[in-house]
Image (tube, rainbow, N blue to C red; front, side, top):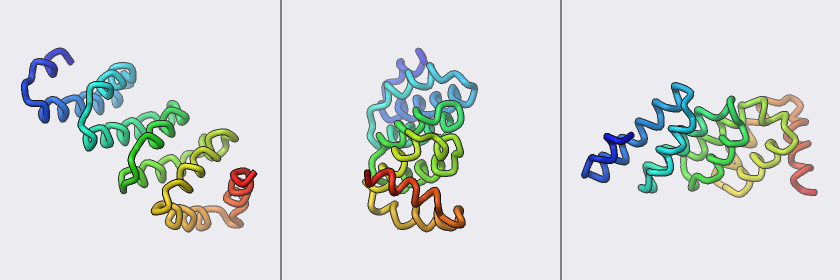
Length: 138
């Protein structure tokens, strides 16, 4: 991390922080990865870092992974992150996280159609989808 700070090119520095984040998360060093994330300021690189955070936190800490997905700007990368989380049984069975996930999907209209068709294919009958939709309408 200290060596990255000595690099004078901001673009190269951002790229190296992203790689450092990926490696530290992969090794289970989440504190170091989170610290690297704080040093990324480029919007494009930050989105990639958020996605990597979702990927690595999804089973270890699903609530944190969902928080990272929510921070992302609407994009195909965010859609991928939300789909990744939508397959996570810990989130689907959690009474707080499942509605939060669905609410995020509803706020992003470009994701909604694809997402609902995905869920209807998975759940037959789609009782969980209906149950979560009803809880959101309350």
